[in-house]
Image 1 (spheres, rainbow, N blue to C red):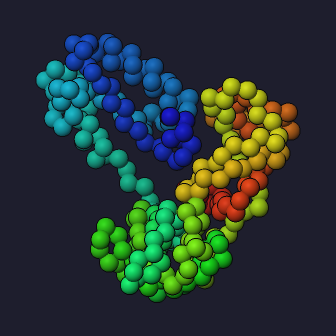
Image 2 (cartoon, rainbow, N blue to C red):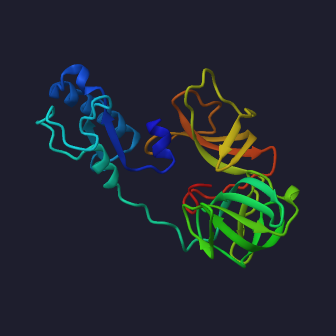
Image 3 (tube, rainbow, N blue to C red):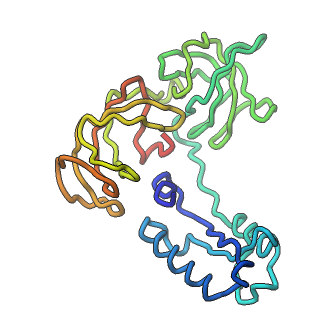
Length: 270
């Protein structure tokens, strides 16, 4: 889970070490866990300055909201304080609009209403948008949490009405600004993959189901380009015959159905 989180862009973490009441709030045991878990997270890629370890008891409430008298040796923040201290990530407002579609509704008196999370850019009322299906439309209205909006930025889950047949918009498609680098489907793409909990060898022709943004699509490993170190990405072998559990590499992947994929450096959620 730590590797998955880090790979998906999570760079800060709070580690709540629970059930301290069952070991009588033993500082030595806490320090041992901090060392072991900290070493593992460092190997994944987390920086020590971005980690906080907190001794808690969820049952008794120790260090959840207020400092506990049972851990006088602990001088750090409570769990709620640590969560409030997370640095808020910069929202990609200036990038072209990207909204992976989560669902589509047909509402009487309103019309077709796609629903999704604004990942980058800003959705504006009156904007001309384009879906990866090729459908284009004018945004008639925007709503989030039962409130009407003139615009919506990154992080907001929105519904927006468009005059398009609902059958042309499906979950897994992506919506963007028609006039500013609209999204499009990829015939194939190169991905950096990490093999986890797989019993055998993965060879060319392997066809897993890929979950990316809101899409859920079968995708074929067309070409194994390289085997690389998991953390550094350093090249180990070119054109390997297979990848196995615990290994990583670069692979050319071909989706079996239309799929929008973007460069991680530009649109990490996609």
